[in-house]
Image 1 (cartoon, helix red, strand yellow):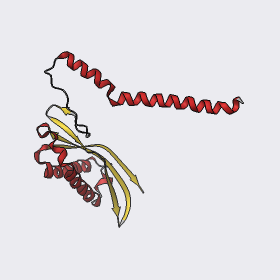
Image 2 (cartoon, one colour):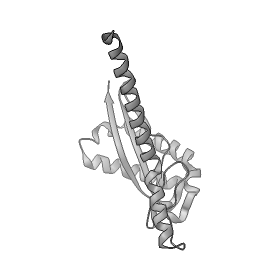
Image 3 (cartoon, one colour):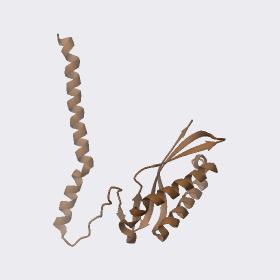
Image 4 (spheres, one colour):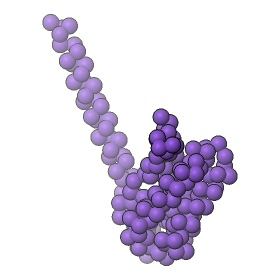
Length: 170
């Protein structure tokens, strides 16, 4: 009888422990520490400037610049002779001037389209797979993306940051 109940008991205990751990991790990630930080700011004074949170995109203040985070990553196929050879996934942020505020997020669809078009052109020139091997090619790609960003945003775009890069070969 115990042999039949033991697996069920282990599964129930594992589920409770996993659920409790997940709840704890979620509460820690969702800003449990931000409440304490906000309380400390209130204790210091009411006239102090607080960090501004972006509308779902996650904008961080660092003095006179902030970072525009795209809502999704860029996925670019690398095609040779009409057949896909690899897939490149890029997580790109753009450093912007704080004076532009939230207005840069209204340009996201146009900016995303222009950057994706430029990435496809660079993939056609075989730049994307080679940027892992050659830092100069990575810098050339970032400069091209900055130029494309400035065509849409003007001088508000200060720099292009590539936070994450993945290449899947077929």
